[in-house]
Each structure stands twice: as C-alpha cells, then as structure tokens.
Length: 105
Picture: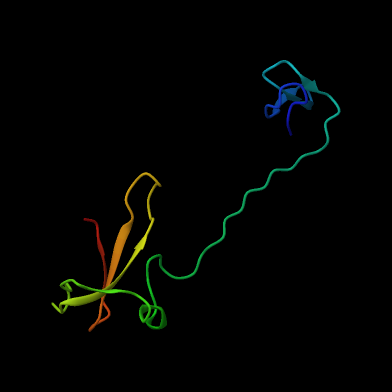
C-alpha cells in the first residue's frame, strides 16, 4: 500500500489492539483492511551448472586439461552464480570422461 500524499510505502504500526498504516510524511490510514503477507520458496531439482548429454552437443569445445583423466578437450558454458557486479563462473565438462569442474580465472 502506498501513501496517497507522497507515494511512499505505508508501514504497519501497532496502535493498541489495532494496527494502523503510517507514512513518514505523517499520513495515517485508519480504515485498515486485514492484510496477510506470505513468503514461499520453491526447491529446484538438479544441481546448478550441470549440463546433460543432449545439451552438451550444442556447447563450444575448448582446450582444457581434465583434472580427473587428463584429457585435453572440454565443453564449457558460463553462468552468473554470484552478484551481478562479479564475473561469471565458467563450467567445463570433459569430452571423454564427462567430469565437470569450475574455472574461476
């Protein structure tokens, strides 16, 4: 709910047994309706950054040494895993053994 005078967000303030909606400009909304705030989270399936066999056919191939089997080529993709002002994380998947790892450089 927004203040009709200045446009700021109205904040709930307890007033005895009632709760009034007040603004920093001094406006008070007295005819308060019941408001219920709900927050929910959804669980996503799978791991972030993992690419299945069908998707890897469209990925670019680069020269990279697999830490598991020492093969010299890997598929790669980039995902923004941190804040927007930080660089993307580069994921690599070995062409031979399918081992997946991250490259932070």
